[in-house]
Length: 503
Image 1 (cartoon, rainbow, N blue to C red):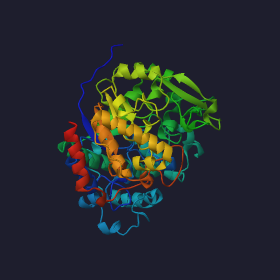
Image 2 (image 1 turned 30 degrees about the vertical axis):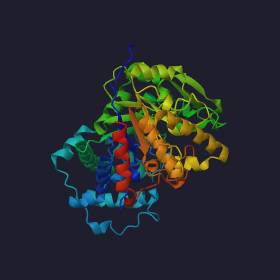
Image 3 (image 1 turned 60 degrees about the horizontal axis):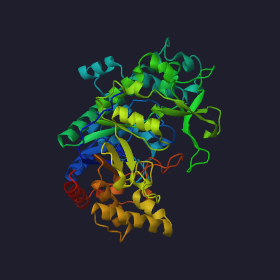
Image 4 (image 1 turned 135 degrees about the vertical axis):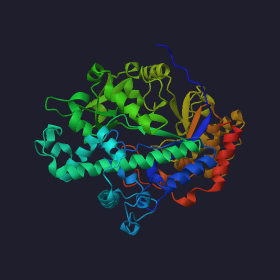
């Protein structure tokens, strides 16, 4: 297979989850603050806005445990925009207490209040418009809408606890008369989301900002895909349940490994129809985004399966994934491969074959090994995306503050050596200085693209962490920024770096 080479273009961007944007509605939305953030990115010389999955959140409030592989989160719909359309009165939502803490999303209140307010908007919605009729005819979200209507009918229980015939009929042959309005409501949430998203995306493009999406590789057990398409997509046992679940084996960070619990794909069966489900999923993602990060890319080479009854990941085994067979016809897409974790020559070969950039994470660089591939001076491959950290990492400042004196001293020695070799000012009087120095080092690096989580740009601490993997906590996925965080000075500093390092 001929290796694909793509032209390098130096650019920089910021990772900012939609949920973390400022707003008066308890969670970031696609309204005014999203437009102001695009303006801030433009003023900072940024070219990319990376978001986390737009999917409805599931277990643990995680967007990586969604009820659908491609539905859109109704919580992100902006109510002020609906009021401008005449679908809401501001007094219907202005006095709602969305959260007790302006820095945290309260997902339970979103579930109670946001959905109730959206139902009021739906009651006023004109259903004879040609765009609405065309949307329904396309049927993109019909499965999701039916699934959510049935979940409502059965008090939001997992589909595995639904009574027959709903549990196993997959929606076929049912009398849905009593659910027609509910199904249309969930379709409405998707229609409105797309309308607001497309307008925001258009505005970002006009300001020179591309949007990078994020695709979880796996879906949730309690998802429309497992309910309706499990025989087609997943490895099942004789009872039609998941025979195996996903995770990763034990390593230096976890003696039991990580047991994620997601169903794993039946790649042999998917191959029979040319991986049609995956190709449609990726093609649809590029209707929403300009580029796409695919999570846990290594599983396309080899994936780890754990018996569904196992209590941890010690009992699992590696199996061969689809490899280049899946991606041979997907070369036109700008895909970023999340190649972190246990990486071997098979994954490296697949990256070379696809031509997709992998990821380098600066906070993994300081282990004392001068050959560490994440050190800025060791990033030789321009076709990569370098990060200070990801949504799963500690913010840089928190990472620095967590080190003991010896580890901190060793890091600063390495950091000084890196700065000397790069001719980057070595300023480390405070933790914030160190954080900014590390961002500048990454700007200097050969990586085509560099991305900084917004909490690293602002040099925030542990309180701003987006997620701690393998934990369930009200701190995960809930952190939010406020308007005063987005100052001119920090934007001007970033823009200055883009000029110095030609990004």
